[in-house]
Length: 279
Image 1 (spheres, rainbow, N blue to C red):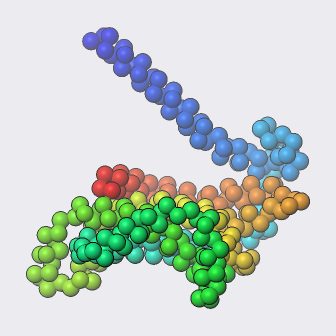
Image 2: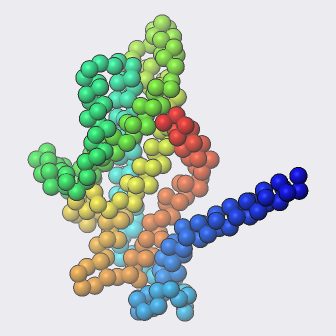
Image 3: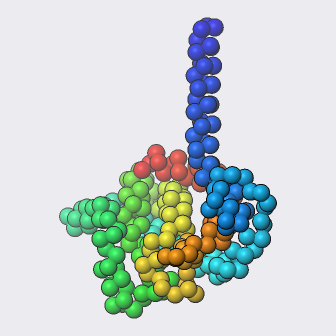
């Protein structure tokens, strides 16, 4: 028994050390960004790995004013919110309809949606701009939202399809006997039961859209409509890079998404675990 306990203690110690090393590797880039955000530009370039000689908290107030943070937060929040609502709603509706009403056409459409994951984004950038221009929504927030719907639908559909397959059809049949129509069944019975998987999509796509710079860079060419990451990206030019503004802005851009994650941590983790099992 003592030998078994000793081996378990050694294994636990090794795992603990590995976890500490992994945590340090993940947190070091954040610490690096935060420490450099408090330095003057010359120290950031000359001594990026050293501690700040003086803590310039004024870098944060300057970044707040220069990048017009309230405007960027508003634009990013609008794009993220409506993109997530569309992705979750459309993916859930399509997945539920395909599972409950299988046909030859639904199988073809399912294959087409899943295969769209394989298309690299770089290959659709030019056609995307042309199509958005033709329908008159290029250089608008709705243009960015519509783009995220198209890109995010396939993966969300893949997760939702697995979750819908795990739902008992008897519940919906019982609701039909009670006089419920298709739309009430979907919104009052199906959607609440898919909440854990919806939370998984919400977290993964939420972090991606909030931190994405590629779609806004292609779709939006108006400073008044810039998102946070696009506003920070515009601080870097061919001959000049404003690191003393960009690094504090990066730290500030993390705060809203971290607050949401900490506030809903239990629900998010439960949703991810449940969604992973069902998916």
